[in-house]
Length: 155
Image 1: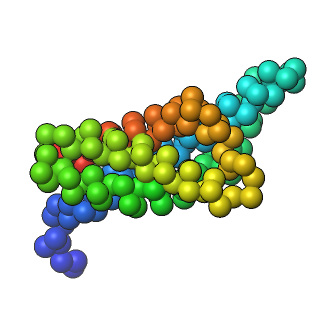
Image 2: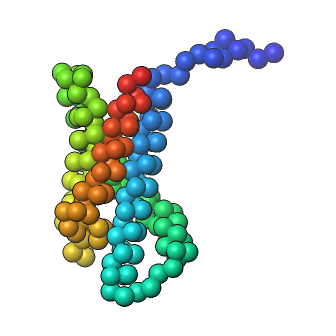
Image 3: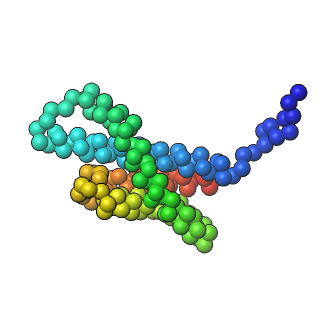
C-alpha cells in the first residue's frame, strides 16, 4: 500500500510562482510574435503584395512556432534582470508590486531587444521594434504579462 502522507499537501510557493511566471512569459512571447508577424505582413501589403486571410493565418502560426521561442529567449534574458529588481523594490512598496512588475517586464523586454540590436549584424533584429510605435506595441504585451504575473502570484 502506498504511503499517502503527503497527498494533498500544498505545493511550495515557489513552484506556483514559477508556473505563473511561465504562463506570463508564454503570453508575452506569443503577443510579441503575433505583433511582429502582423507588422511584417502589413508592410508587405503596403507595397502592394496581396495576402489572403489564409496566408496571414498560416504565417502567424509559423511564427508562433518559429519566432516566438527566439523572442521568448530574448524576453527571458531581459526579465532575468528586471523582475528580481522589481520584486526587491516591491518589498518597500508592496502596494505598487503590480505596477513595478509590469514596468519591469516592459523595460526588461525593451532593454533585451535593444541589446540584441546592438550585437546583431542587421540594423534591427525585430523589424517591428525599429520604430517607437512597434517597440511600444511589443512592449505592451510584456507589460500585460508582468501585470498578470503580479496579480496571479500575489494570491
